Image: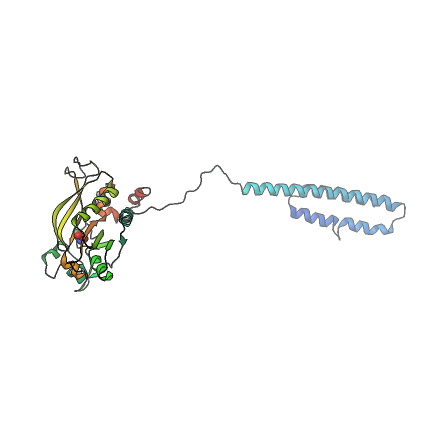
Length: 344
Ligand code: DAH
């Protein structure tokens, strides 16, 4: 029996020594030490031993079990260590790698300019008003003192949808909508940014759609000097503290008198350069005192109320401000163009 045990020990140790994975190790543990294992089998035979033999064999059994258990424990530990090593290797994080940066969008230059204009006027107590892009002939023209067949309608070639509906050619109709909405209350102080549409052939400086910001102030004793002061304040905030303005007589059907407003060239400071075509001035908006007929159409008595209005092209201002030479850049979704304005 002793020999049998010794042989079992040798066989077990040899096999355990070579075991390659935890599953095989467990199989061997069951094979030798399990309830139906070979060592247990030998123990069962001990009943037939004499009283002298029993402790001796018992001792040998314990030795064999001890030896087998020892190697199993050692192997288990080795496998566990290996497993830990493998995981550490597999889940290794290289903290020195550069991070993956998130693609970050930018604000479109037109939106940026509109927001800037809004901020400036909100700072002066204005409210932002809105109106529809599909407009009636009445709001777009008639109520703005442009009756049917008025020659000035030719100034703005229009997209008509029906006899009476068109894509608005200007943000000025919002003047009338706002005044009518206020029902004669004063003061009115709004700006209205928005998209407008004209039947123009697209080129570097013309687009069939573009953006305007309209402004309207109605109250008692509103004078031309209020208009001038307001615009002076606006251009200083928009283009820099040294920017000046000049007003030139002009014509719009909805204002009387009407003016074109130039800013001193913010690039050369007025000395003359390519941007201002050597004139020192850049034309940026139209303005004037609200025509009495327009006041009436809006529900305000011209004997009691007066007001001023202005309208500017957002693309033109953005082009001047950022040195953009082709208006089509704003609309053709060229990422290399848009991306330049990320941090502006
Ligand atoms: N609506 C004019 C245009 O599109 C711009 C304009 C000029 C608006 C004078 C005004 C104004 O409110 O007073 O050409």
